[in-house]
Image 1 (spheres, rainbow, N blue to C red):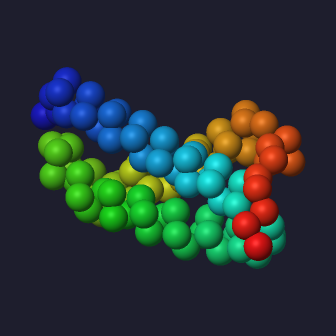
Image 2 (cartoon, rainbow, N blue to C red):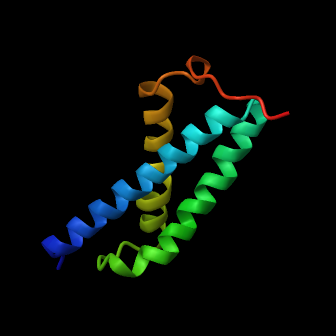
Length: 102
């Protein structure tokens, strides 16, 4: 049986993962100037960071979801939602002036 505390902890973990994905996506959009760098970063590094965060905080969520449920709910959905939030709702990186360090 699922408890209210378990659902609250799952929701907090989901929001934290979404926040991490959105911040990492914002960082990549501000710092990288290439399209392939953005794709590689979004497809490899962000899911790896979310997976590591899931392994670290996975013991806090007392709900059994199975392997695919955990990957879908704590890696896949936050990745898609964080990327969507950053791309659709945040200002374009062209509006910011980033100092050139070359």
